Figure (cartoon, rainbow, N blue to C red):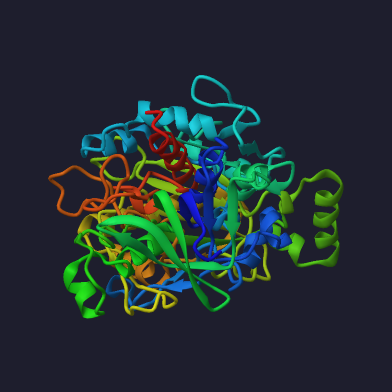
Length: 533
């Protein structure tokens, strides 16, 4: 590997990096190197949809980050799992197919990001999408990343749907249409009973190309510059430091935690921070690591009076055997679906013109996502505020690239976010007290019958957790935005030959799960890099 050079170096083999590795290497004239800190995606728990209960805690496949103690969360540190394998977080996530709202992308455009409005990004969502049911004009059935419908109705989801209908929420069979508001079954990023990560969808078909080299177990330490132009990447592999050289560009796809970390380690970021760690300054860019956003979830847990939950199947050897046989012979059952089947988007804040909260309905219950299920029949309604105002940051705490950065989420920092969280939990509890869902419930496990807004907010602070969507720490923005790290072509300001393409590039959170937006970003970025747009 010593002194080897490539046209393009892609740092991070995750949701965006796998897409770029594929698209940039489609032309055999382009040589591409993909650098991934984690191992190959060989674990069977990656490919089994319900397996993220295992990968959620596996240090071989998961960075297992912890935030700094957060005053908005009663000083708690929040566990932030992030994928550390080919496919990145698309190899360990909850599989939900959500794009966000058209208004999200029009807002990006209105912030000065030309080319990122809804009409601009829709073709790239469709380019990625291979939907088993939905087609034109908003969907595609021919893309590499599969979106599959849940084939079998579940009595709990059916009751959830009818309950939401009773509260005025319409039923939908497509959360990715132009309105989003509705209740129904999620589509999942699965194919024939297996997870369809970006490693499966994009990297597997490309890995035999002679012009694509994939380096696993190789951690990027910093970007190498000559006269403010990125010319390579220093990597650590098996304890050995070496350099990979770039003839054209270096593209960071390391995610919202590690892309800003790599920039800061490379001398791009707030000058005062870099000086503190004696890192030579390449360019003073104060927005690197700022603007951190995340979806904060509140998990409402209920005990059922009927044995219809996944808890019941997991609690007996017969139930586990049936689950295994369903998947083995039919690629069906809970093992093929994951945990969250039902979804709901609606509005709870008076000023909202589009949905401002999202529910994930899980047909099981546990103290935390990926935790051991309860010994009783139970289910979980997880709810999050879709467009939080609170902003945190990511900053290095050492010049050692193997040390994790400090992540300060700054949850519930604004009154609006606190009010929205209270309203979201109230709405979830209202669902539980409305027929037909009410007739299935024996008791409310969490929260424990709060009687005031103050008590609900206290529950949020004590129990809130990430729903795994950190974004925004290398935001693209206009020239007059002092915290913009990137221009609308995703180029790092102040230097040449360097881009960032991942969730950190997003100026604001999409209204929903972030995996598909990360894929869209990379699809469009590949056309930008290759000069097609």
